[in-house]
Length: 535
Image (cartoon, rainbow, N blue to C red; front, side, top):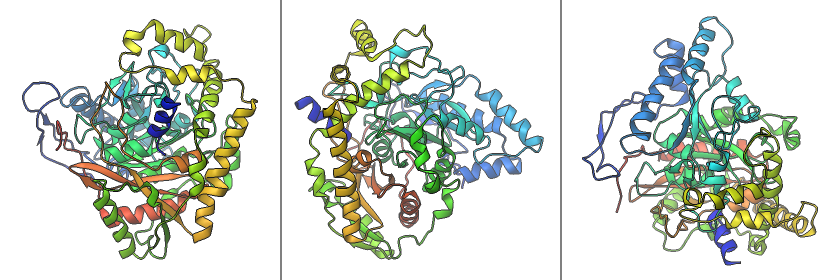
C-alpha cells in the first residue's frame, strides 16, 4: 500500500561535461529552450572533493556554479521550481570553508559541497522553515535541526531549501504531489508535464537535474523512495532512529525520518554516514548506536549480489504494468550476478492493516505538530493545528485552490496519544509489519532482503483530480520503521522506474551492499532530458 493508497482509503472512509542539449519546448508557448552546458553534470561527491583537493575548484566556485545552474534551469528555462528558497549566506559560507582549508584545519566529508534540504528541516539562519505552507511564511526556527548541524559539521554548504508536497503530503485527501501553497508546483525533469511524486519532490528533482551535489528528504510513507524512483535517482529511507527527527516538522514520530537522495548509491551512502547520529533531543536515537556507522561506503561491494537470498514481493508487481519488462530484467540481472531469488515471498499480515496506519498518523500528526509549533517564536501567527486550519480557510484562494485540508480536520478531531484507539492501532501496525510481516517473511525463507517495485513511471500532474496511483511498495518498511533503498532500474517510454530493497531494522549495510551491486550491474541512471512531454 502506497502513501497515495492511504489517502484514497481515508477519502473513502566522475565529473562529466556535456554540450548544450535542446529540449522540445519550454512549459509555455515560447521558442525551444536549451539547457546550458554544466561542468558538474551528474558529478559524484568524490569528483567534487578531488577537484577541491587539487585546486581545480573551490567551495566558492562550486557553490556559485550550482547557484548559476539553479538560476538557469530551476528559475528559468524549463523552470523546474524545485528550490523554494536560496540561502543568502551560501557564498560567504563557502568562502569561509575555503579559508578553513587553506589554514590546514581538518575537513569534513562534505567539505565545500552544495547541498539542498527539504523545507521541513529547521535552520536557524536567514532561511525560513515552512513545510510549504503560507501559514508558516517568515518562520525562523529557534535552532538548527540535528540533521542540519550534522551537515554543517561535515562542511556542507546548504545552498537552499527544496519545495515539497505541502505538510509533507498530509493535508488533503485528493492532493497533487509536489504542490505547496508557498512554493507552487515542481516539475519532473524527465518530462515537465509529469509529476515528480512526493513529498520530497523538490529534493529528488534537484538531484536528478544536478542542482546540488546531493539532497536531504524526509519520509513517513513513500516520501523519499517514491520521488527518487519517479525522478530516476537513489533514495534511502533509514531505519527510524538512525537519524534524529529533532527540528523536523513532523507527521508521525513512529514513522518519520530524514534520509539521503543522491545520483549514486555511493553518494547516498556518504550522506547517510553524515546524517546518522545520537541526539539527546530524540531518545529513539539511543537505540541505534551499536547499529550506526560513520562510513557506510565500506559496505559497498560490486559482487555483493553473489550468494544473496532475495525475496521477491510479487504482490507489488502490478499485472500488465508497463514497468513489467524493466522489473523482470532487473530480476534476471540479480540471478546472473549470483543471487538466489525466492519468488514469490508473501506477507499476508499486511492485508490485515486496514486503516490502522492512517489512524496512527492522524493522532501523531496533531500531537507532533502542536509540540513543534510550541517551539517557535511566541509571536508566530499560528500556534496550533487549529490555527493552521483556520488560516487555510481564511486564505483559501491561495492555500486551497486545488484540494482541501480534510486530513488536517480529521487530525484535529483526535484526542491525546493515551487514547485506546490510538494505542490499539499502533500495536497492530507494529505487529503486522514487523514480527508477523517483514521479519516473518525473512525468517521463513532465510532472506537477506526483500525487493519490490518502488513505483511505476511518473503520471501526468493533475491539479483537478489529484495524484494518479503509480503503484509502489513503501508501506511495509515505512509502517515498521525499517530501512528501504530505491535504485534506478530502467526507463519506460523515457520515464524512470526504480526498484526497492528493504529489510530488517538497521540492515542498512546489507541493503547498501546489494543495492550498490545492482547499480553497478545495470548502470541504469539516466540524466533527464527536460522534455515537455513523452508518449
